[in-house]
Length: 289
Image (cartoon, rainbow, N blue to C red; front, side):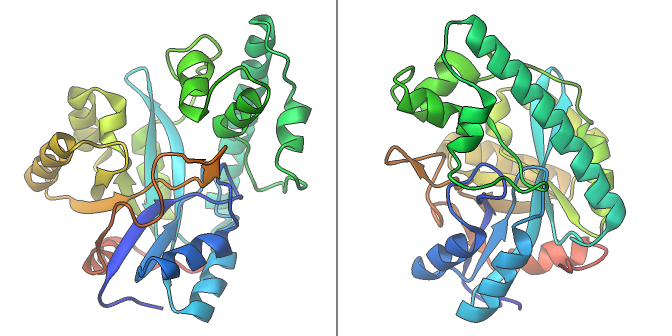
């Protein structure tokens, strides 16, 4: 399905990673908000894409098959979005499985650090909080831990949980070896997709962002994001122009926990559907799932 006109939210998460809603629910929300298209970009997995595409066909919303890959550069976690990837590419799926194994090891170490800090929490408790069985191709992330911390009174809300315990400079954070942004961009291209640097404003280091753009050479950059201020958007638009990059936008929707939407609500950051054609032209395959 292709969307010729309208607005698109190109960064959303579902139950396949650390979102609160099913992929189909994300698509239905997009329809309610009047969006022409939505991307499913779960962390290191494409497990939710087919369900979303099927729902998109049913309700008339174009679904972009996507992924958000975890990388490391300059001492920071850097995320690379991949659009129109071939979700059946066996090499790509094996690579994503390896990233999920790394994430699982990181999770166990973070739980151990939380326990050392006197926080009563277990990995079994975090998984039980999902309210369902975790599939092998799905991931557990820091928002799931944060949810438990809030429910048990260790934090006021999700943001407080990250600030006090789980964020990059917080005491329970664990850094693990990850692939580089260059490798992520290569993997995405080899899976027929288009790589885009996610939310550059979150990294707090524009010199690093510039180095990543030079070395990894993504096709695009997420200029509009729920955590970007207007001045950030202006700065990254200028970067996109200077490097000849596709400009994307996304809410980074994860759903609501304790009544608070994490990052932004679906449709809060959008670009024209014309961007979909730019992303398709920059990909090798066109995204079959």
